[in-house]
Length: 164
Image 1 (tube, one colour):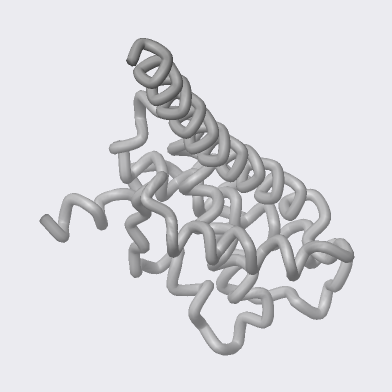
Image 2 (cartoon, rainbow, N blue to C red):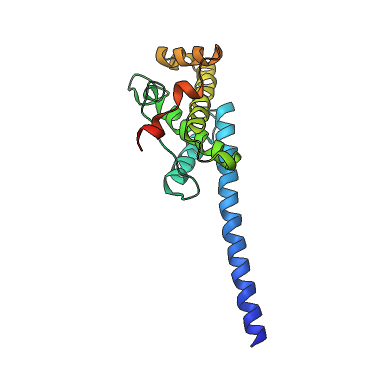
């Protein structure tokens, strides 16, 4: 009987360890992909990695994201913005990375919004460095705000609290 109890306990511990390990591995993979895409948005693996990351963020219970609709995130959805799809995906990844790397601030939606927007702007900057035809005036205005230090939580935050 003791052997059976020990075996059952061992099995439960191992299963839990594997589940936690898989969760940690996926979080780590998302963080790695998000940072790689900021540096090399057109790498050979970029499209596949971006698709995996978005699918993970949609399906996971590991992180909750609030997608805001405001003057900053609106540029991601504008049909004239040829980099919009990639920027939207990066915005989502940036928020998740912020929450994973700052678990004590995971409920700070305004800070997560800022992190997501900044990540999207980093990928945009990297994209136009390789393909200048992707430049989009509205995004350039937000990049200029960021460069002047005017892109702050006060400017981008508030959507999470307005919906309560």
